Length: 121
Image (cartoon, rainbow, N blue to C red):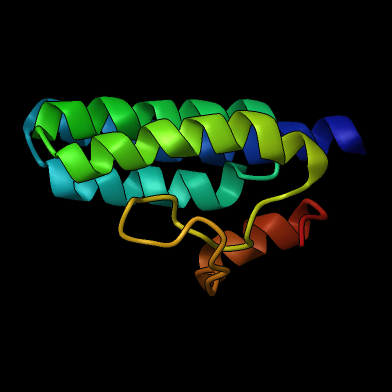
């Protein structure tokens, strides 16, 4: 059922975002970004989740004072909000500025399990 699908995936995304937020608060910004990347892999098929995860990546990049990541996230926020509704996004892409916008990447097995359970490719 689509409602269950949305809830299970939204819960998995929320868990990754909560971990990231907790790590930001404790000062482990590198590991926080890793959890944002995991949330990105899960949420990139949804315009809402995809865009809000890039917004969180942008805020973290500002906190880290990383011009490359700040610029990369600005571009990705625009792309996520305008391309995702048309199904244009690369599977498995982690969403950081260190990865080309349209590069497909392997999905970690635990995240693939969540996506498979919910009918995502």
